Length: 414
Image (cartoon, rainbow, N blue to C red; front, side, top):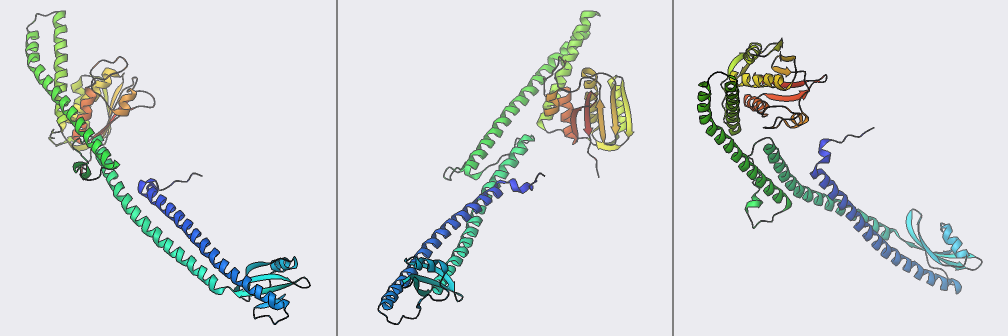
């Protein structure tokens, strides 16, 4: 049986608090044991010395035939058996034992006739002192552990709060928000100590700024190139229309059309990159819109309407998304190509070799194609960008029985 821990059990704060608690308990236990052993040895040693001193006095009185003092006697009742055997062997010894319900320090020595001369000393006060010391150690240890854990948890929580803030900014950057910054105050004040969290925050901010700068440069370059190409291509297209009919003219016109399409795609991508596209929302029936897209594409695409739906969307952008998906399916897939409307979910499926692994894992990438495919990889890139503008989710997968499957999930209004 596998034990599943709650999600908070693996957090840094919990691990740090557990480590601090364990180390505090271990240190408190070690110090407590050392103090207990030291005080106990000292207390027992003093009681033993007193008992042996009284045993000396009792031995002299016994040998002189005098009356023994109270607390001394020969073979007294309650004498522990080990001490009795020790005296019978002609040796002396001491031992703490309970006698008449009280802790007692015994001292014993040999007497005539293999008998035992013993002295008992009340050990109640010393025992109570040690017990009180143990309670004090436990109480002070608990108080010290509690205070240490609270202070440690407060310090660790401050660090983890900054780490969580850095992680949130990193997730925003990975989601495309390149304006996000940690802005840790320690990175802006050189007089403050620069810890590891501040170093990570500064590195993340620098990375985001560099990435943003490079991306903006790329976007400006793309937009500038597309704009600069637009004017000569317009003239080239007009000139191609004036050429006499023939095969060479058809080839020139086809290449000019391809260049114009590529230029318009680059311009559209540059507009999408700016993130300033605005929607023109209207109510549309998905079934009718899908039919118009297929007719405009001039392809043999089957339209299946399982469940029609009316959605609030930008018609032009949605037609652009579906048109690019249908065109990509016919260009890189194999028939039959099926466009299915099931409520706010629209799928486009072909029966070819499917999407490449990189596209499923990371999404479409500009100017990247595999397997000898023609094109520039901009169609699906534009479809994904327009879907994001619509607030829709566009995902790519391969069907179980073969073929590429693109799924567009449109937002449903209240």
